[in-house]
Amino acid sequence: MQDIEALLDYLKRHKLYLTTAESCTAGMVVALLAKHPGSGECLDSGHVVYSPAAKKRLLGVSQHTLDNFNLTSEEVAWAMAKGALDGSPANVAVATTGVAGPEPQGEIAAGTLCFAWAFRLADGSVQLYSSTEHFAGDRSRILDEAARFALLRLPERHAQLLGEA
Picture 1: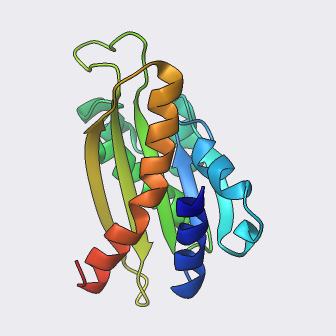
Picture 2: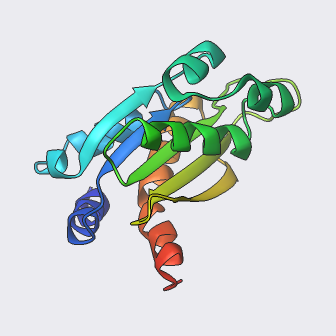
Picture 3: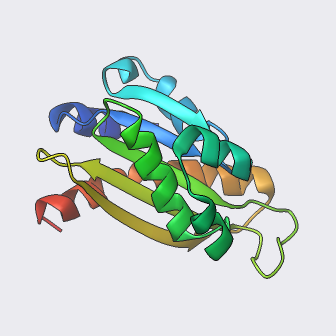
Protein backbone atom coordinates (compact mmCIF):
# COMPACT_ATOMS: atom_id res chain seq x y z
CA MET A 1 0.00 0.00 0.00
CA GLN A 2 3.02 2.29 -0.18
CA ASP A 3 1.87 3.35 -3.64
CA ILE A 4 -1.38 4.75 -2.19
CA GLU A 5 0.58 6.55 0.53
CA ALA A 6 2.84 8.02 -2.18
CA LEU A 7 -0.29 9.11 -4.07
CA LEU A 8 -1.63 10.84 -0.94
CA ASP A 9 1.70 12.65 -0.56
CA TYR A 10 1.45 13.71 -4.22
CA LEU A 11 -2.09 15.01 -3.76
CA LYS A 12 -1.06 16.99 -0.67
CA ARG A 13 2.09 18.36 -2.27
CA HIS A 14 0.17 19.58 -5.35
CA LYS A 15 -2.86 20.78 -3.35
CA LEU A 16 -5.19 18.41 -5.19
CA TYR A 17 -8.58 17.85 -3.57
CA LEU A 18 -10.41 14.83 -4.96
CA THR A 19 -13.97 13.80 -5.68
CA THR A 20 -14.94 10.56 -7.41
CA ALA A 21 -17.74 9.27 -9.61
CA GLU A 22 -17.76 5.49 -9.56
CA SER A 23 -20.05 3.11 -11.35
CA CYS A 24 -18.56 -0.37 -11.63
CA THR A 25 -16.00 0.15 -8.83
CA ALA A 26 -18.85 1.13 -6.46
CA GLY A 27 -16.80 3.19 -4.00
CA MET A 28 -13.63 1.13 -4.05
CA VAL A 29 -11.54 4.11 -5.21
CA VAL A 30 -12.58 6.15 -2.16
CA ALA A 31 -12.16 3.11 0.10
CA LEU A 32 -8.54 2.67 -1.04
CA LEU A 33 -7.75 6.22 0.03
CA ALA A 34 -9.78 6.16 3.22
CA LYS A 35 -7.72 3.27 4.62
CA HIS A 36 -4.83 5.70 5.08
CA PRO A 37 -4.48 8.37 7.76
CA GLY A 38 -4.56 11.88 6.35
CA SER A 39 -6.75 11.00 3.39
CA GLY A 40 -9.36 13.50 4.59
CA GLU A 41 -7.01 16.33 3.65
CA CYS A 42 -7.29 15.27 0.00
CA LEU A 43 -10.75 13.79 -0.31
CA ASP A 44 -13.99 15.73 -0.62
CA SER A 45 -16.55 13.17 -1.71
CA GLY A 46 -17.33 9.98 -3.56
CA HIS A 47 -20.37 9.29 -5.71
CA VAL A 48 -21.49 5.73 -6.42
CA VAL A 49 -23.76 5.92 -9.45
CA TYR A 50 -24.53 2.45 -10.71
CA SER A 51 -27.71 3.10 -12.69
CA PRO A 52 -28.15 5.43 -15.66
CA ALA A 53 -30.83 7.26 -13.63
CA ALA A 54 -28.32 7.93 -10.83
CA LYS A 55 -25.74 9.17 -13.33
CA LYS A 56 -28.31 11.65 -14.64
CA ARG A 57 -29.77 12.66 -11.26
CA LEU A 58 -26.58 12.99 -9.21
CA LEU A 59 -23.98 13.95 -11.82
CA GLY A 60 -25.98 15.63 -14.56
CA VAL A 61 -25.01 13.11 -17.24
CA SER A 62 -27.27 13.99 -20.15
CA GLN A 63 -29.76 11.65 -21.75
CA HIS A 64 -28.11 12.55 -25.07
CA THR A 65 -24.77 11.18 -23.83
CA LEU A 66 -26.41 8.03 -22.50
CA ASP A 67 -28.35 7.52 -25.75
CA ASN A 68 -25.44 8.15 -28.09
CA PHE A 69 -22.65 6.34 -26.24
CA ASN A 70 -22.58 3.07 -24.40
CA LEU A 71 -22.55 3.21 -20.60
CA THR A 72 -19.07 1.73 -20.92
CA SER A 73 -17.56 4.64 -22.85
CA GLU A 74 -15.06 7.38 -22.30
CA GLU A 75 -17.78 9.92 -23.10
CA VAL A 76 -19.90 8.72 -20.17
CA ALA A 77 -16.80 8.64 -17.93
CA TRP A 78 -16.03 12.26 -18.96
CA ALA A 79 -19.56 13.37 -18.14
CA MET A 80 -19.40 11.59 -14.78
CA ALA A 81 -16.05 13.18 -13.87
CA LYS A 82 -17.20 16.65 -14.93
CA GLY A 83 -20.48 16.24 -13.05
CA ALA A 84 -18.67 15.22 -9.87
CA LEU A 85 -16.32 18.18 -10.19
CA ASP A 86 -19.16 20.63 -10.90
CA GLY A 87 -20.91 19.62 -7.68
CA SER A 88 -17.84 19.84 -5.47
CA PRO A 89 -15.19 22.27 -4.24
CA ALA A 90 -12.65 19.64 -5.37
CA ASN A 91 -10.18 20.48 -8.13
CA VAL A 92 -9.75 16.92 -9.44
CA ALA A 93 -12.21 14.12 -10.15
CA VAL A 94 -11.80 10.49 -11.10
CA ALA A 95 -14.58 8.50 -12.76
CA THR A 96 -14.99 4.79 -13.54
CA THR A 97 -17.53 2.92 -15.62
CA GLY A 98 -17.39 -0.49 -17.21
CA VAL A 99 -18.14 -4.18 -17.25
CA ALA A 100 -16.47 -6.14 -14.45
CA GLY A 101 -18.07 -9.43 -15.43
CA PRO A 102 -18.13 -12.31 -15.16
CA GLU A 103 -20.22 -12.08 -18.36
CA PRO A 104 -19.77 -9.62 -21.22
CA GLN A 105 -22.41 -6.93 -21.67
CA GLY A 106 -23.51 -7.10 -25.28
CA GLU A 107 -20.37 -6.66 -27.37
CA ILE A 108 -18.33 -5.31 -24.46
CA ALA A 109 -16.01 -7.89 -22.95
CA ALA A 110 -15.85 -8.47 -19.22
CA GLY A 111 -12.92 -6.55 -17.78
CA THR A 112 -13.43 -3.49 -20.03
CA LEU A 113 -13.42 -0.27 -18.03
CA CYS A 114 -13.40 3.39 -18.98
CA PHE A 115 -11.75 6.01 -16.82
CA ALA A 116 -11.77 9.80 -16.78
CA TRP A 117 -9.74 12.31 -14.83
CA ALA A 118 -10.95 15.92 -14.68
CA PHE A 119 -8.94 18.87 -13.39
CA ARG A 120 -10.42 22.27 -12.57
CA LEU A 121 -7.99 24.97 -13.65
CA ALA A 122 -7.46 28.34 -11.96
CA ASP A 123 -9.67 30.08 -14.55
CA GLY A 124 -12.53 27.67 -13.76
CA SER A 125 -12.23 25.66 -16.96
CA VAL A 126 -11.94 21.87 -16.84
CA GLN A 127 -9.33 19.69 -18.53
CA LEU A 128 -10.37 16.07 -19.12
CA TYR A 129 -8.32 12.94 -19.79
CA SER A 130 -9.63 9.45 -20.37
CA SER A 131 -8.69 5.91 -21.28
CA THR A 132 -10.26 2.53 -21.88
CA GLU A 133 -8.49 -0.41 -20.30
CA HIS A 134 -8.92 -4.17 -20.22
CA PHE A 135 -8.31 -6.18 -17.05
CA ALA A 136 -8.14 -9.95 -16.69
CA GLY A 137 -9.27 -12.19 -13.87
CA ASP A 138 -12.39 -12.72 -11.86
CA ARG A 139 -14.77 -9.89 -10.98
CA SER A 140 -13.11 -9.17 -7.64
CA ARG A 141 -9.63 -8.91 -9.15
CA ILE A 142 -10.87 -6.74 -12.03
CA LEU A 143 -12.52 -4.30 -9.61
CA ASP A 144 -9.47 -4.16 -7.33
CA GLU A 145 -7.13 -3.49 -10.24
CA ALA A 146 -9.48 -0.93 -11.77
CA ALA A 147 -9.78 1.05 -8.52
CA ARG A 148 -6.01 1.11 -8.15
CA PHE A 149 -5.55 2.09 -11.79
CA ALA A 150 -7.97 5.00 -11.42
CA LEU A 151 -6.04 6.41 -8.47
CA LEU A 152 -2.49 5.60 -9.44
CA ARG A 153 -2.77 7.16 -12.92
CA LEU A 154 -3.83 10.46 -11.39
CA PRO A 155 -0.24 11.83 -11.02
CA GLU A 156 0.51 10.87 -14.63
CA ARG A 157 -2.56 12.75 -15.86
CA HIS A 158 -1.69 15.71 -13.64
CA ALA A 159 1.82 15.75 -15.11
CA GLN A 160 0.24 15.87 -18.60
CA LEU A 161 -1.79 18.86 -17.50
CA LEU A 162 1.35 20.60 -16.24
CA GLY A 163 3.20 19.77 -19.47
CA GLU A 164 5.66 17.53 -17.65
CA ALA A 165 4.72 14.26 -19.35
